[in-house]
Amino acid sequence: MLTVTHYTILSAILFAIGALTFLIRRNPLIMFMGIELMLNAVNLAFVAFARFLNNMEGQVFVFIVLTVAAAEVAVGLALVVAIFRARDNVDVDEIDALKG
Amino acid sequence: MPFTIPEINLVPLLPALIPAVTAMLIMLADALLPGKSKRWLAAVALLGLAVSAYFTFTLYGTDQSAFNNSIVANNFSIGICLVVIAGAFITVLLSIDFLNARNLDFGEYLALLLGAVSGMTLMALANDLIVIFLGLELLSLPLYVLSAFWRTNDLSLEAGMKYFLLGAFSSAFFLYGIALVYGATGTTNLELIRSAVDGTSNMLFVAGIGLLLVGFGFKVGLVPFQWWIPDVYEGAPTPITGFMSVATKAAAFAAFFRVFMIAVPLTAFDWQTIMALLAVVTMTVGNIAALVQTNIKRMLAYSAIANAGYILVALVVNNAEGLSAALFYLAAYTVMNLAAFGAVIALGQGDRERLTMSELSGAAQQKPWAAAALAIALLSLAGFPPFAGFVAKFFVFGAAVNAGYVWLAVIGVLNSLVAVYYYLGPIVRMYMQPPAEGWQQTPARTPALLAFAVVVVVLLTIGFGLFPSELSQFAQAAVK
Image (cartoon, rainbow over all chains, first blue to last red; front, side, top):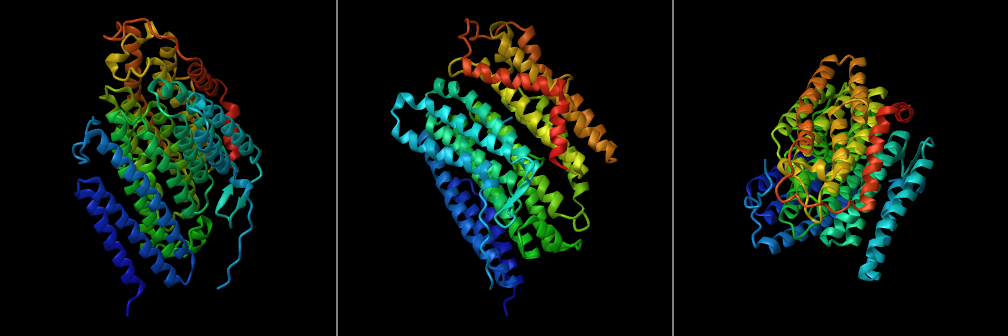
């Protein structure tokens, strides 16, 4: 029998994988995929809690999160393209002019 | 399952709606107008901000709520909205000649700026975690683009990229916090969360609040979530840096204060001690790192971190006096920090800026008025009387002492003393050293609008310091 605890733990694991992807990988596109995984972990948690609490709000929030994630993708990809045009390389370790 | 349609009352949402509508009008006009006349879009933006300031002001004292209590226009949120709108107004004035000199597009810039204003006011009005999240994203997405707006400048692109990646990362934490709080309490409304928690501690709830703290800490720039601030503030176009440092801070702190003061009972999670420690670490790290900076934008970024620490002291106090002190501090910080960034823009020439300490040398001989404005802004930030910064610090630390946090006030005052050293650095350079190489030629006149905006914020910096009672009465009435 699957309970809400299982879903919560699964979403925590997905969230941690996403966060580790962000921290370990150096390509902004892959880092961004990590962020998307984190957001989807949140969606899973929302849906599981909504089912457990018998409360529709959580499922509505998922739509809000999806919309925001789509807007974030649009901005993020535009920034990656702008950087790629300017320097033909998007490795975040080489984007290091600002420091101190 | 019964589902009641909430009553639709758009009036409390006007501070967020009017900037959003103005942004859309500007985007539309941008597509229709011929190239040369686009600078008139700035007048549209200023008009939109003035109208929204007027309607925001009419909401003062009415204490309305809307959308099933997820938007609350009480006097504190109205005060924060006014600070944000006033900051945006000054920023538009500071931007016009900056954009002209660099040949940047007006329409997109102003539309994005107003979009960010809409998100900030929404965040200040929000009484529900999901609405706070929407406001947070609505303010962050335009700011990512605005940071990278000077597309031919590598530093600006880099700032946008770093801000975007770290901002999206922190939003995910914030959102996961909302999900856990929702799982623990079954609601996202701040007042309902408080009654659902009812003083009992719960692992899920505490974990959720911890993640929310990470998200807020990132946005307002608390140590250890501050690493993005210096890079983004240095790389972003200077008017945007000024706008981010004051308006984002005001909006994020408004939501931060509201979430913790309303939704999180101390019996469920003793956040006062954690906040006190964060405040001490934040102001100390910010001030010490600022000591060794050679770029004035970077120095002001570390100063912004230190100031976040001072404002957090008001949250530790956790009463009406602290809240009104925070409102006063945010208003004063807005005028003096915009004065500093405006003066930095005014000291520049064409598309060049005097940013490093060596470039600032001798600036007072060539641009005496702009140098004087920067000197006044920095003295105010350092907390010298009779400027706004002194009164603001006095109220925050006074509230801490009255609430029994004498040790916190003492650490804050010691920190302010350390800060005097780096705030005085640029002033000494400007007034006591010969002009820097490459900057000896006679400078062009400062453009009129830019000069006007700087004069206004400098006068407000002095005015808030000499006559603080009007503003402080407003701030005290706002939290009754």
